[in-house]
Length: 274
Image 1: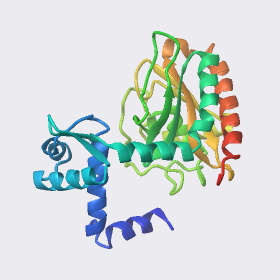
Image 2 (image 1 turned 30 degrees about the vertical axis):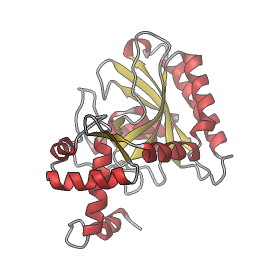
Image 3 (image 1 turned 60 degrees about the horizontal axis):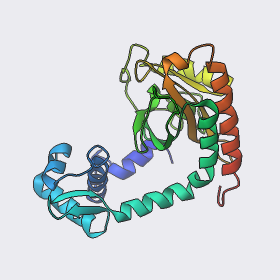
């Protein structure tokens, strides 16, 4: 089913959320609000999301009753609860991250640079795993961090090798953002044409490069991790200060990422249900 049809089904012919969908959307938004704030009161959640205080209280209480949120009795602030932790752990295990971790560690130890494993969530890349660099000067992004898909190496690797990719605006491998895409630095790719041109290079060489497109002074190189059908379901990246990711060192880093991505792909294909 196409993306346009799915959108109509979810929101109704008039483009408005159906009552059931709206409730789910709000509950998910409340949970996601804790990505940026470890502990919140329902009133703080309401202000953060633009909800009425009564609505926020109702949703927070429902999530608390299911264990998705916990509560500090002294401060009356809520936090992500045990059910969320259990589901998250199960999700990571069933995606094979436990099996993939040794390869990520080997990549980090072999290069000395930070390693991330990410997956696509809409027009963002969510970091599943991150191993910090062994150097004092480094770039860190904790698990759960989100990056714009057009402004990071993992995002471009996922776009370039998604099923049906070959068009930065396609229904399967493309982005839903309107042009111009958000600019983060002078190097950010903000048009479909520029992104398509870069993705063509990614497909030709097999890996993506972030040339300070998200943060000035930070570069990265990433390659796709593929499923049994050859689709990129995740991406692995090396990230660090631009001073250590110069032209003299980038070929070696790219080679290391490509080799690791190949091994991760082979491991994933041996997972049950892969």
